[in-house]
Length: 595
Image 1 (spheres, rainbow, N blue to C red):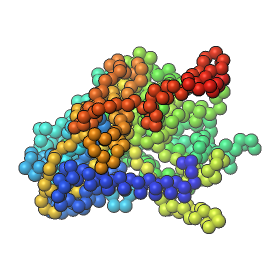
Image 2 (spheres, rainbow, N blue to C red):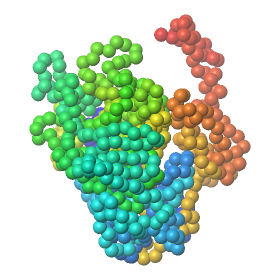
Image 3 (cartoon, rainbow, N blue to C red):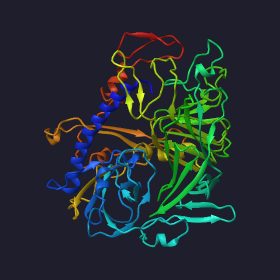
Image 4 (cartoon, one colour):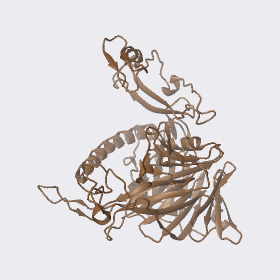
């Protein structure tokens, strides 16, 4: 948002070039590990557009029955094993054969796809195959064989037990029931239970860890301040734009968008509730996944209409009865959680002129609210950086999309009016005119409730939200591709659950002898002090587990940036005193005053 459109386009181009280069190397490496050096698979690649329901190889391989076997590799970048269900874009409705481990003789599971979210993306699949991955090893991958075998299995309404007849006993089936007289629909996977309005699909309550909260969810938007429309004084020209969020009135209430209808789908342990709204540019899907303790909400927002001359800032808001006393918490770049208090700043007396915008904070990984005793908490993890706030006790709102028509005069020199067609050349070569429709964004929020405090809830799902599994797909006509290893891992064993392997980088090239190999290892403790009774405690890691097959002869502790030894840094660092008197660095005559 803080760059001119042609600069943002250049960033995207350069990033995509780097991603494509990395995908080629990674696909080749995985192909050798899984299928062997003499494998005939030639189209193994990363599905980069799963959030748009696009994966060219899996879609091409599921057009005709029994014509192609699709090999799916799901890679887990975390240092702990995990079960992460995925939705694989496919081209056809009907029945699909799933075999784990890449072995054509392994136990076969027959499942059906679900109707995918409506997508404006070119080539988007109409169906998505719900694939329960089981446990994927730490820093490793599992392999699956997928074959479209034909037929058509329509998606029945809730409660038709025949729909579950083809599901194997290994899969975890969700319970469903109707609450008498209210036409509410309840789903549970044994870890989380959610109740929805049977007509509109609105979320009404959630239950987890013996805690039940009346959690509701709504969509809406704030209209953007535009001096040409809202300005009353010459001095009040601050528009809402790339750097500034400012609603058209300081106390503006969220303009809510009501749901109109819902579609309920379930197959192979997956449940989806698709919601249609009175504004067709907002869609949402609630998702309960097998083995997952959270409720996933996937949204598609856009193109935001601006024909009325108004910019709009679109918000997803969850409301609970938690008595949070005007306090909420947001992460600082995924590390420490920072306490935020409504209409308050810890280091100065705040005069409140913008009670909505002035209480928004960056959310890079997660945001949560809790009561004073931590007996009730609600946490939401995000899949990209967003603005977030808690304007009422127990509520959390997140801004997922913006489109403004005025520049905020903070340096960009243009509004955030991004379009899918692009922009004409900038002066002096053109007029920088946008063309096409407004952008459509699709993203996910994951919501957890419970009685362990909000930090524990947030931490438990932050890493998995940040590091969704990578899905690689290849195919071969008719027969399955021979598999050398159905599962691979890069660790000797899982690291402790509160430790993240941030970096494992080889510093020496491939020609170095075994005795000369050097690696850079970065580890991060994922819990702050007091956030969890057990997981906030110090953790012990054996570095041998991070480098299986290696004989470690020397370990050198470096600074976080990895450019100097920790003892050298200790000798040269400045030592500050609290009194304001002159201080000096160890081993240096330089002195600085603490001010």
